[in-house]
Image (tube, helix red, strand yellow):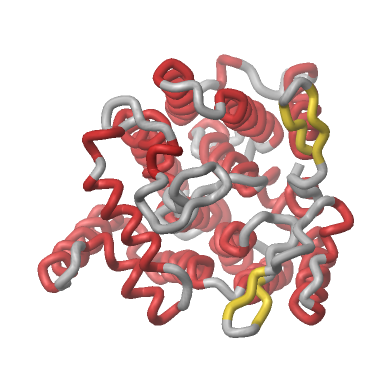
Length: 397
C-alpha cells in the first residue's frame, strides 16, 4: 500500500462508466478484501476514533449529494477511498511491532524514491512521468525546481517527509534500531528540502519542535494553555487578524502565505453562504482573481474544504475526530507510564504519533490533501486508533 503511494501516480488510471479507477484504488480494494477475508479486523474492534471517522465522511458525502449535485462521483469516490484505506490499515497495523516494521521497511522504499527526486531536481524532468506523473509545467521557485515526484503538488510531496519525521525521531531515540531511525530522519528532511516549498518547511519545523516538549510530556495541559496564550498575545499585537499569520511566516519560509490567509478571510466573510450545508465550489469563483480546474477558488485549507462541502457541522466533526485521536494517544501514554516509570519504546512511538498528528493539524491550514497523500493520513490515523487501544499496549488482542 505504501509502495503504491510512493511509486504510482494518479495519472495512471482507467475510466469505467465515468469513474476514474486510479492505480491506488486497485490496491485499496485488494487491501480491504484481504483484511476482510483474513478477518484481520472485526466490528468488535470499532472504537470512538473509528466511529467519528466513518460518520464524518458519510455525513459530508450525504449532505453534498443532497444539497447540490456538483461532482457527485468525486464525492462518493472520496468517501469510499477513505473507508477502504482506513480500515485496511486498521487491519494491517495491529500493534507497535507492526508500525515499527513499517517504518524500517519504508526506509528501503524511500532511498530509491529520493534518488528519483534528485534526478528531478538536477534535470528539471520528472522520472515519474513514465507512469503518469507530471512532465510539463514543472514547479519552480527562484529558478530552482520544486520537486513533486509521484504526487501532484510540492506541498503534498513535502507532507510525506514532514509527517513521517516525528515517527523516525521516535525510532531514533526510543528504539534499538536507531540507525534506521537516523536514516529515516535524513530521508524525510531531504524530501522536504527538495520540494523547495514553505509549507513543508513549517510542517517539518512543527514535527521537530514537537519533540522539544518531550521533557514536559506529563504536562500536556500546561503546554496547551501556553500555546493558547501565545495565540491570544499574537492576536492582540498583530495589526492584521490572526489568520494572516501564514502570510507573515511566508516572508521567511517562502510560499504563497497570502493566498492561505486571504482564503480564511474571504471564507469567513462568506460564512452565511456555506455555514449550514456548504456551497458549490463554482460559487467561489469570485473569491480570487484566478480559479483552478474545478472552476472555483483554490481551497488550500482542509478545514474550509470540509466546510464548503457540508457546512460547519462537517468542520465540527473533523475537529471532533482530531480531539478523539489526541485523547486516545493521551490515554495510551498514561497507561504506558503506569506500567513503567522510565520512558520505554511504546512511549516514544506514541509521542511521535501525537506530534505527527499535530503536523497534519498545522499543515491543513495551508493545503488540502487531494491525491495519494490522503492514503498516508488514513494510515497514520489508523495507527493511532490501533496503538491507542490500551489492550494492544498490554499485549492483548
